[in-house]
Image: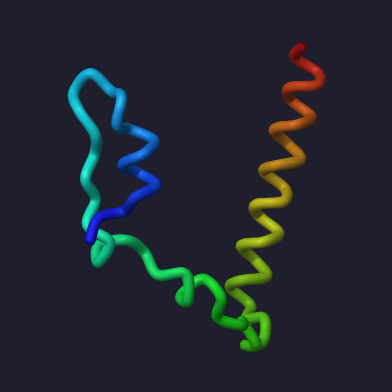
Length: 65
């Protein structure tokens, strides 16, 4: 069976519609897993680094523009 939403969205393209078999689509059940695991040191360090980079980029853009 094919994905009807993709077909309907692409049916009027010059190259024709896209046919995507439904068995190759990602399952929604994988995204709904609860994450009950405790915070690790690596996750905390990664979060701090990403926050610092985000703030530094925002400050740079604010000063540069």
